[in-house]
Length: 379
Ligand code: UD1
Ligand code: UDP
Image 1: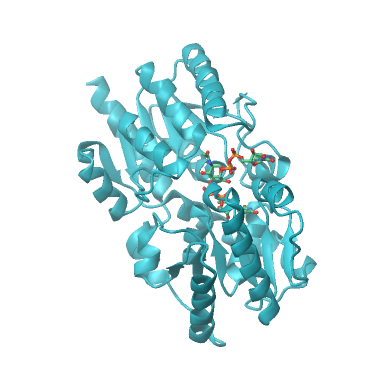
Image 2: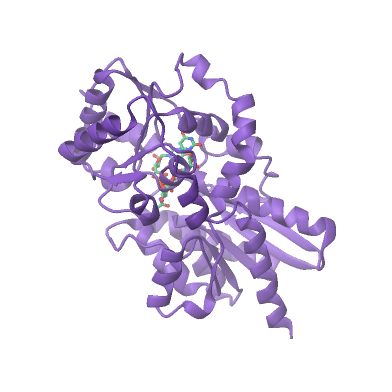
């Protein structure tokens, strides 16, 4: 019996964990050695619509351990997680720790396991924005250099790791979020009623999400983005904006007088199936989310990225994504560019998706790489 442990804590990590757990369950039906798996939820995200809903919809068994860390400054939050994860690792003694993405939960997992000499597999390794002002960039670099198995979603990620001297530990696996999209897209179509509830017609609305610290914590940038979304909503089609709690808080705190245009429809965070449905039907997505940039691409929805750079450069090269930062002129230009290009038609990125993001079987490849690594350890 081999014992695996996964650390998750933030919304996108639940979405990445789901196919991995499915791969573990599939393996246990036929393969050996039998795998035991424990999920540790740090509690970084804790509201029902930021956490529980993903476990329910994606049929992720409840986390065996929840550290209940909650929100706080980077040091405080990461420190509490580090102490909590260390205790769990000492108690449970897993053979290997799996970490996902680039959040504070990822970093804490990596630090705790590395100090205890527990091997670490990093899913979504090798992404770089080359902007160290982003907390995620610090988390990724540290996590990659502390990990033993680097599971890179794209060829660009492989190349980034090679440049940092980590080629020996790296495997190209494809993108695990693509697995989740493929598995749930039909379910989303049959279960989600959100478009009907909001009285939205497919391809006659835009989708927006904003939550990155670089945008939310700079009142000028936040205002520029919000005003631009107001302008876009005033054109022809409404903008649907499922809002991250961080952004709600920042608007209340820094921009108490700002008001949305009636066609800028701000709604609470939505579940994964509603989000897939919203993305598939949107004319365009305006976002600073890493996950949504990819999902938009997978679902043939053009994207305007409200950041200065992206880790998902393939989406830009394939002309599915335009980088604008929070610059109103650039956002407006990108919007007009897409509207001109779309007309009444649609775009199709599927060939590029297949070429750059794997075949939707990434979780299986991730598990396979982990098991191979364990085999080489035991000989
Ligand atoms: C975190 C990740 C970010 C990721 C995002 C996904 C870090 C450094 N950042 O950012 O990379 O893109 O998750 O969504 O790990 N809050 C609530 N309820 C919740 C969770 C958060 O109200 O359930 C509010 C709190 O005011 C909190 C703020 O949101 O202070 C920020 O939460 P936090 O987890 O620190 O960072 P995110 O912005 O969510
Ligand atoms: N998401 C969701 N509901 C929302 C907003 C986002 O289910 O209201 C999903 C989205 O589809 C993607 C993931 O959450 O799969 C991305 O998370 P987020 O944007 O919070 O973080 P990032 O990917 O930028 O780290």
